[in-house]
Structure formats: C-alpha cells, structure tokens
Length: 59
Ligand SMILES: [Zn+2]
Image 1: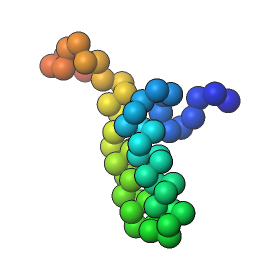
Image 2: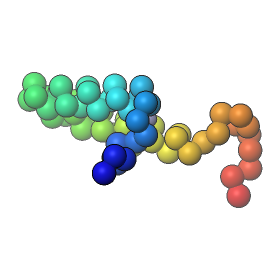
Image 3: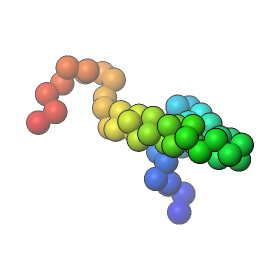
Image 4: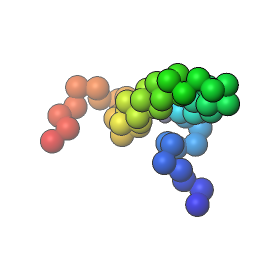
C-alpha cells in the first residue's frame, strides 16, 4: 500500500503534523500528540478542495 490514511504524499502540512505527533508521543506528551492528530484531521478535508475556485458551489 503506497497511499496512507494520513493524506497524499508530498503534502507538507500532513508531513509536519505527523512528525510533530510522532515526536510528541516519543516524548511522552500524549496530549500534544492528540492535538496534532486533531489538526491533521481538520486539515485533511482541504485536500479535496480546489484552489482555483474557492467559492465554488460544492453541490
Ligand atoms: Zn495534507
């Protein structure tokens, strides 16, 4: 499996949040890790949004 649940490869935001979450877990700061993963989930839907037409009607 090349694709992960963490988002498309090459997304700097996903990579940064994942790295921050992993680092926080290693450091024992689980509250921070959870926070990073929450931010990641909030960010991921943006992958489906087009930047060309931000006011596009989604329906
Ligand atoms: Zn992303």
